[in-house]
Length: 258
Ligand code: MN
Image (cartoon, rainbow, N blue to C red; front, side, top):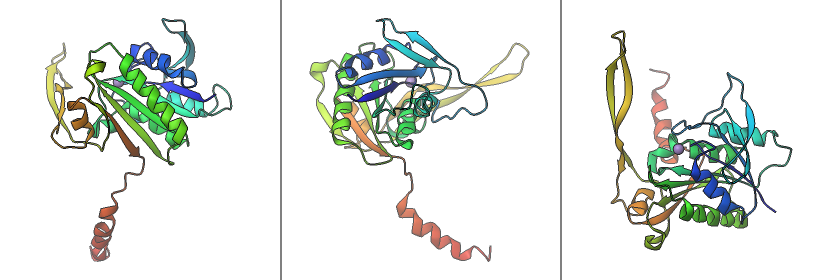
């Protein structure tokens, strides 16, 4: 039976994690190692300057799980490095995240970073996100996650690649289907908020409206969600811009004279 490591970035008590666990039990043996608090937008973290602690917890339905003080990517690393034994997971699944992870979000996302940590260690991985910051019905997205998990276990993935899955927060019967997509363009609406502390010194928040995106760019993850499609985006760890290699190389003819 396949061994699936499940984690998330919203914290071990987030209902998206439990929903995905319940769907994944039909696919393999699920072990949970997740952060003990919310790490959304923590990106890819490796905790090196403070100790990590791990405790066992029981989820509301009685499921045993492991909670770590580390980031989502730390959770994956702890298991890969042998905390729960020498057997490596066959698949890392991260989610279900509360909120889409599309376009440039993937560089901020702790959910996607946990999947990246898996593939860096040679383990196939998927990240699953629901496109809503408040929807509490994760059942359909969990089924999607389990279906994609089953497909990855069946077909495998090339080294250093993962699948990033986003699910519209629409009623299941209104979902338009599934599209395999490329990354779209997020439009962030961050605002710098300055306030004064009780001693009159300024402090700052990054505030503003939730991000939008280029919903008209056909074939992207952002477009797919806007159309009511489940989006599956294959990602690779190699971020090299191959088309720029020769261009930057050509700059170097002036290197010594500079
Ligand atoms: Mn999150």
